[in-house]
Length: 97
Image 1 (cartoon, rainbow, N blue to C red):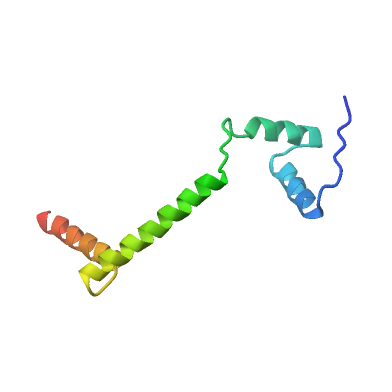
Image 2: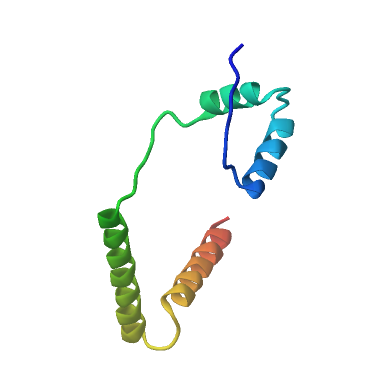
């Protein structure tokens, strides 16, 4: 069997790998490596800077919308109004029973 040599692995990573080796019941490092390869996700998702920027803009727009809706509704926040509405729905459904 060929030898596997891994260099310059930080100690905290080695601790995690040792723990994982025990948790997965692997006797050798090669067995752990084989398990990790087999358990890996079939698809790799890469998030680029453009995706991150679009997500940031979407969050900012949502927060802006939340402020506008809260201003129009007056007292309370959108979340409070949503909870209040859900409470009424629960009471209505209990009354129907």
